[in-house]
Amino acid sequence: MHRLFLICLLSLTMLAAPGAQAQEAGELTAPEATQTDRSATGGAQTLEDILARQRGEQVPNRARAGEDPDSAGAMVGQLGAFGGSSDSDVWSALRYGTADVTVSSGGAPARVLIQDNGMWWLNFRQGPLIKYGGWLLLGTIALLALFFLFRGRIRIDGEKTGRTVTRFKFIERFAHWLMAGSFILLGLTGLLVLMGRKFIIPAFGHEAFATAAVASKWIHNNVSWAFMLGLILAFIFWVAHNIPNKTDLKWIAVGGGMFKKGVHPAAKKFNAGQKLIFWSVMILGASISASGLSLLFPFELPMFAKTFVILNDMGVPQLLGFGALPEQLAPHEEMQYAQLWHAIVSFVLMAIVIAHIYIGSVGMEGAYDAMGSGQVEEQWAREHHSLWLDEVQQREGEPKPANAATTPAE
Amino acid sequence: MKAMLSAFAATAIIAVVAWYGLHEAGFSAGDRNSGESVRLGDG
Image (cartoon, rainbow over all chains, first blue to last red; front, side, top):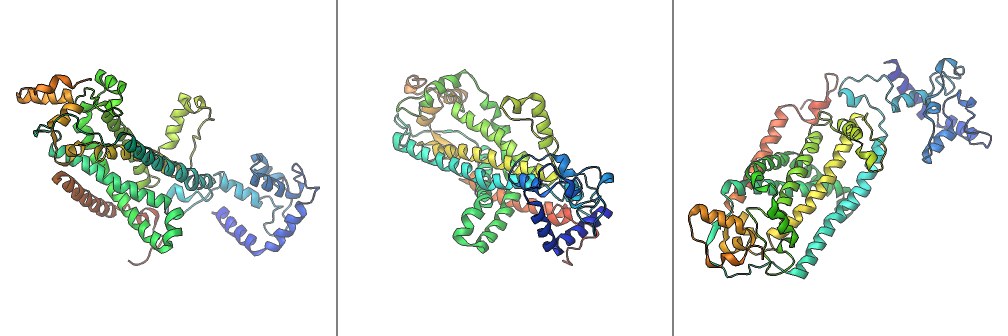
């Protein structure tokens, strides 16, 4: 407690005596003040140390933490920098988490008064995250536009039969739209919260962004549960149909028939492309949900320090040419890593889902019906899911249509 | 189309229930970060 009092007092002293500080600083910037001569500060860090650190140079922490307080210089003036408990000692203790801070509420996170990873996180969030994430989404849309120009809409090649087949039941489509609708809402509100400062404020002003941000936060926090429920339902309904098999290799070998008219590789209920979408949504969606829960309940579900320990033990960061990941994280660092991971994985999944939306709507004739009414044109099923159609017709005891033999694996 | 609209309605209901439930469970930022010595107003 007495240290806390000391900190408050020191802060007031620093604010009250800027003139004296400036004078001291002027004396220390003289050419004779070298990096190793710390007699002026009683062994604690010097102004040169501080300037070197601000230039991004390595400064030994021992100097920053000061020498043994018992052998420090005599106290000069009230709580001056020459005393046994100098400013640098106190601030170093706060910075390195060794200060005995007590708080009346807020728990462990509130005891962290300085957390200098925060600036790295903020710069990354406002810089590369927005830049590369934004370009990923715009690049995906541009690629799809190019693909549309090159390939056009993938039409049903054969003659339509006028008969339909039930592709998805009501409950399956419900799960899909629960997941899809909530994902679009989460994506838009997430982008608005992330990019609003950079794009919305300059265009529409602070007040408009404040209203939009509050609404986005409410939607993002509460709609997330619908997404997680949809994710679980979709997993239960479709996991059995999404186990990879040999047919997928043949499908991939001809690019799924996406790039050439009249090519229709055989597929069961889901083709290799759809399986890729399914597993991307499941794995990335689960990861986004985990980091999202960590953000939804701040400081309650830390997961990065433990993950970093496991990754270090496996040698993953070393294999990729990085140093060991930090295994001791402040509560705030846990939240910062959770936010970055949440956003990065979401950008990747958004790019994948944009491609999925394209092929399920304008990109392919007849594809939307599968999730719209649940009934698909029999010829569409024959061209894109021939093995599945055979199974359905066998189950229902219907004879195969005359053109059945011509379509699989052309 | 019915499945889609039902899912969107369910999303809205789930969101309101989640908001109400978390509020009642004491998971608002105010609840989590206040103590007896912290006064957040009379409301």
